[in-house]
Length: 416
Image (cartoon, rainbow, N blue to C red; front, side, top):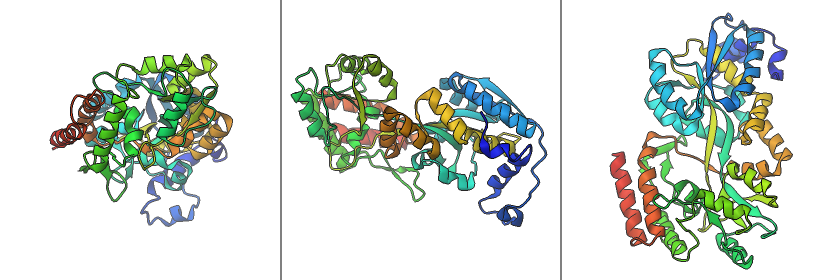
């Protein structure tokens, strides 16, 4: 496995490319602008990369090629994905952290606030990535990592029970009722915290995002929008679905999946993690956009995984080159897709994956229109109030508008 762009350059040239990328924005350097025969920095030192077990084999190949081309050793250190963020925050300031680590984009607020990640410049290569992937990995106008996969929820459909995709929420419910099964549709919910992540597409269809955005497109913690009119409209709709039994907090994610694979419902709102169970059950599976309940598009959250650069890295040019030229190559992005089953962030690999697999295509097409999960630290003050309020509204534990407005006030107070 080898990035084609680097084979022709030979050892050291990739580092020159990395140096040019780092200086591409705002540089007056004539040689860089001319794309001439700049000498790359001397190939010295080594890189340490934290990677989880699922992606270690792919990066092993990339690391071997990088070492052969540049003479710089790459040490891969396996970490549990769930531990990477906290370990990175604690170890980078001590000098014990890696140069590069795998991670999720919604960690960025915490990582930037703690000063442990550095922005990267990828120059024109940015045009090669899906927009939602770069938006997700940007914070306060800077790109803080190299994305590799996009994950989102969509609508799974049992085509034997529902031959056609619904164009609206009402149509989905009507198709489900006509199928004469136990449930018109299902989404897994928690008895006490519902599931803001899985219900967010419906909320967005009422034009009720959590936060607004600033002039650079990033989420703005000072612009809390969840309590506006659209949010109240969503709360009242949520109460109606609860009273009609269409949303049920006694059916969690596992029960929702089991009922879908048993043919008890034609529709399940979920992510790609439940696809294997449906295919094992020989469901005639289709993946569709989530239908809107309100007047706007039902946009789910997108979670984007990638690799970020340590603020304490002593080999920034080499690390940036490894990120952009190797992890950012079509070969590596496709290989990471093949082991993870998530749509690639690089458009060339994204298009190839969509052409190769209709399930990935379904999720990928929905994900391309998704909105990044907020990556600002203030999001941590939202989840608990949000989920418990949704559960209370669905269960009819009060006036939905009052519960929602109280939730918005509580969130605002927690952020302040």
